[in-house]
Image 1 (cartoon, one colour):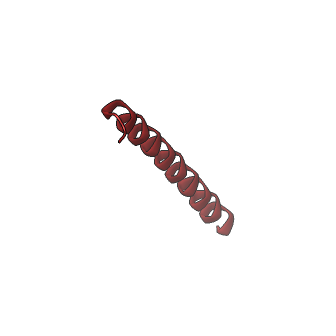
Image 2 (image 1 turned 90 degrees about the vertical axis):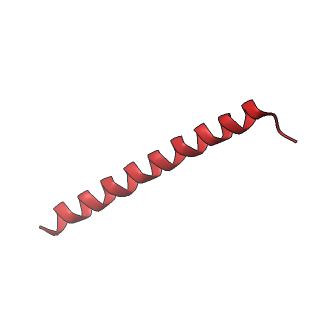
Length: 37
């Protein structure tokens, strides 16, 4: 089984990836909203 440190690394990488995806989605939504105006 994985060590405790490996799980924290996986969790940090997961949070980082999710935050980047959220930023991209928000950016695309804002760009779409502005282009519609």
